[in-house]
Length: 114
Length: 112
Image 1 (cartoon, rainbow over the protein chains, first blue to last red):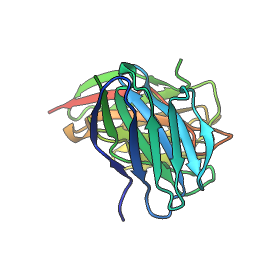
Image 2 (cartoon, each protein chain N blue to C red):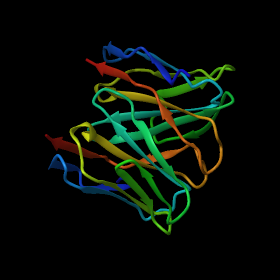
Image 3 (cartoon, rainbow over the protein chains, first blue to last red):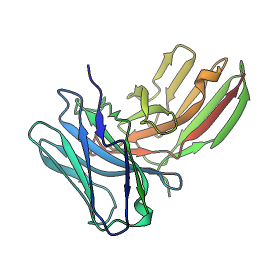
């Protein structure tokens, strides 16, 4: 069974540009969440999508947005990139919706903004 | 401010020693998960604990969820170099089971 797949693995962008990251969840998983991981702040929740709807959002500026498609695949977009956006962006998918929900992570996309 | 406080932040021990990592909060969680992460990779799920007071064992790893579902611990017996990595605890929100709050992590180095 394939795990969570994130593409691309590495990206280098210039300040002011925009970027789109992709996440394919485990087959059968309908919930996809995005996290940002930096050395200073650790793992921070960006947003979660379920059945193409954003169910929850973290405390990030509007430059960070996402969407989910009917096949549960998700994309995350960051516009007007800043140096501080350099981070490992992680996507997690989950199947169950109860208290025993388990999140499975992809390998991440390493974004470097120069 | 982290919702989940992990301690210690760094731990360097010799192979064969025992260790405990703590994850504490003033908030109640619906469940708590432990992950291990290698550099440049995504976190890998080790265990999920759901019930207050629950204890789960995974070979040499023992996980415990506090009675009040606010804290957890991970105990490793006879640590091995292969246990080296970043250990993360994550609590699931009571209102949204798919929203996780992560601790800052414990970087473990086991020397042969």
